Amino acid sequence: MKKGKRTRYNPLEETSPEVGDPAQEDAVAAMSRPDAVLESLDKVERIERLRPSQMIPDRFQPRRLLPGRIRRKFFNSEIDCYQAAKEWLKLSEKDAGWKQRVQELLDMGGSFEEQGQIKPITGAWIPSQSGGYVFRIETGERRFWAACLLAVRQKLEAEPELRVEVVSMPTRSRQVLENRHAQSPSAVGQACEVAALMLEEMNIEPDPSIVDEYDFFKQALKKRAPRGFWSKLEPVMQYSTRRMQQLLAILQLPPPLLEIADRHRIPERVLREIIALPEGAWDAAVKKAARENLTSEEIAQFEVKAKKTKRQDDARRSPGRIAFSGLRRFARAALAVEEGELVLLLDEVANEVVVQGFAQEIQPILKGLESRIVTRLKAME
Image (cartoon, rainbow, N blue to C red; front, side, top):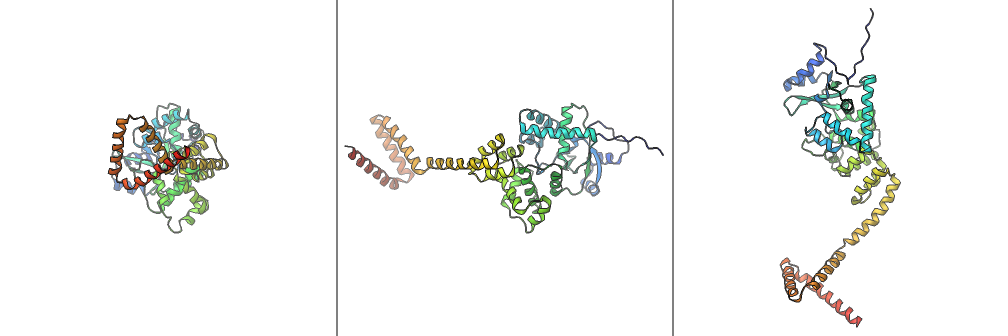
């Protein structure tokens, strides 16, 4: 029997589902079925075809893709996935870090046209804010955004369709394994992976009220890992326990600096050197490392300069220096006041000292100052 020519499925072209296709019927029906029915369906894994508007990425996926400002608007439902893609494309025209990431995703979308979508997106149906259901992505967020970006770039009139696999039990472990297989995450992304797996092991779920997702991962810094956790994680991450603990320490950086480090893929060794700096130097060090692609050795030199600056700052902020500066300003102001007003000024100062309760402590200090002034004036005669 002669076989007909097989048509390759292109997820970025408009496709009309076949009448009676069970996968399509399940996808439509799942949007309105009660929770009990939905739960029974999710026990069986199945392949469906969905449009990006029917999906939502996992907000707490360890590897972040969207820029922070766009990310917040998207997950707050202020913009949809195509508006987010449009803003992302516009941002990439001005920022080299985002330009590289966007181009990688566009290239992935282009490969869909040539080779078809080889791996399906995985995830599960969850209740949406509108009262229906939405497909939350477990793995394959890069494929999701690749389709959105390419659709916006090519100005497609119809939504693309993507193959998805419904799974009953999405896990962080599957996300981490998918990330590492598809493209090695940045050092910040790997730190979030370690934190995510640790928190999952401790049954700590993300709180939807968290404003910045990095704050969820930072919780791992305050927790003691369960017994045997690190040895169990080594084959997953393929790192030693010490290396994973060093990665986790990167999350000490504030969220805005983590985003910069992630966007520019600052290496782990450089970030470790930055964390060794005084906290006040982190901001300048991260931005300089991102801008000039500094090595860990160059950051170590930055550390020497930072320590010198810190000592100078500490000296300028010492109690003695503050007291001297305050007295000098008081003396100059008092000398500029007319004699009649000076009496009133001194009365006000005396009243304030007594009211504040440190009159007895300050009196011997002022007498000591007066004695030293008199001694130096006599020596000058």
